[in-house]
Length: 596
Image 1 (cartoon, rainbow, N blue to C red):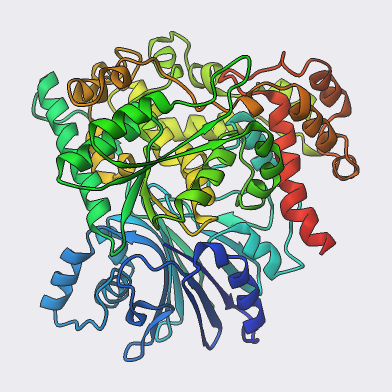
Image 2: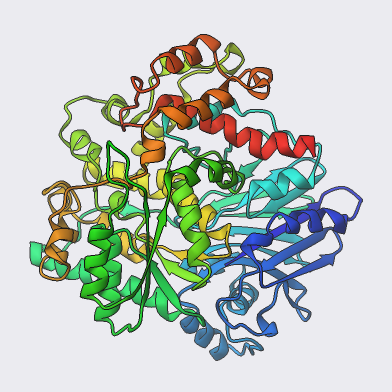
């Protein structure tokens, strides 16, 4: 896990190494263990290293093969690299390192851009081929690793976060992308690739690679697509439970084996993270470090789920660590967390991940996390509503999922940002392109391959990597996703969702964990829009910066401020917080740069 960046010039000039250094400085948290850069003709590459596999200098980056003129910078982990290494050795390749970075380098030398089809894991990498004068940018199938770029007629810049690009080029277009703004406020902060909220920054699509040449431009290709068709073989309920058990255990095991440092687990006390702990114990893992976070209770709500995480830690004899955060520490740390977001996020538990990661990074460099289970196995309340709905067309989805209808969006933003209902058109297109047997199959496929990328996958990556902590997500293992996508809704929707996981957990996890109702991360300090939190949002939205930016219709803002706890989205997000969160991100990530 690392931070990568680079520049490719299309004009007659050479890259200025100072630009690469500026980007590297904004990636320092992602790679605290080392740094390196490389220049060759029109290209400059930069790397910040978090040493996880092959801790020696032989695995340092940028990694260059002088014989072929190929150079690589890579962020991520390739879980099948030992097998690929053997295949490449059989073809005559010799290795000077023992990690996965050189496997990617030599896989490209052997198979060209088709090497991406052979990689199983999470990755974002750039390969400069000097002989062909081409740059390859590639991103993993689910988009677990972030990959941003800025493209003009003179140059291409790329990096692991937007902050690096913003700092690299003072002329970068940081005006608001209206298409993305509509996505952001319809899909609870999700802006599907290639767009971002800023016009001058795009992102590489998951399961895609891009070939960039000075003379012929950009070629983009999808190399993997999820199918959601039933298997030819009839499977009983027990067959499915056993298949998911085997698939999830394999996903968990390889994410602990492929590391030369200890691997822990973020244990929330929910069924998802608890299964990870149990399966690791079943596989023989001993002295496993587990970590939980809780917050001070509020009069309206308990602030932690320790009774559940403690039961799991006790059942499997883990080395358990609890972090209890007083509520008065949450708001002061919120702007800090927003500075580490590559894009605006509305999920309030981002600050919890940020603060937990700070403490976890003192003990381990790698953790497994349960994100993705709800989307892969239909754990949220809106899935059965969509499945059973008799509404047709895009309304079958939007009536249950969109944060606000198009008319409300038009009333919310300044007329400069008015547009057509681009989000409905986009989601409708995505749903209709899925190869699937059932409507719910299409919904889950779009969620897993597009929507989840920007929430919660991006949230987990940003908040953990802010502290040099690598997060691995077994529920988003490609083989497990493909298996789950072929599973009928009857194995997902019953018993409040995630039926197959609950069947797997019975008798394996503590009963209180298996039988508990679906819960959402408790953060009393941010859940109730009153007191200091309300004052915090009021100050943001009525600030001089917000007024000068003029994103929102003042009458709409005043309506929300008048009754701040009366306006919620279909998924129970607070609409006032959505506005404040975007404005806070802009102030932390754009205004601070301008002022500096």
